[in-house]
Image (tube, rainbow, N blue to C red):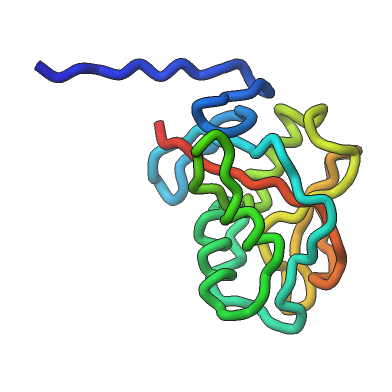
Length: 161
């Protein structure tokens, strides 16, 4: 007999301890793939550069797939401090975190802005060789910053539905 495990999903904006962070909602599937629960780290890095100034990494410009972006950045052989910090993040024995894509970060703003500082946070989505996208958690808009700028970082992970 197969045993079914029931997943208890917490309310938006609350700690999901078994998943290592804050539950920020459901993201639509990527290119027809399955939807997934999105979890943001409780902890953050306060002052990290995006990195790779002057280089545009192929495969790191998705607005929805932070895992693909983070993987491409880290495999490039260039120093990307924000992506490196996010990928190494671990909480309560839970790993598998990454630097969120532009729209993943925006979902966190929509559902749990009060749990972030009133500042801007790096996404993993590049704009050009010189800049990348970030999310403002004080007023909600997204913009791009010079890759040499220092910004806040939260690590995200996903749990497929």
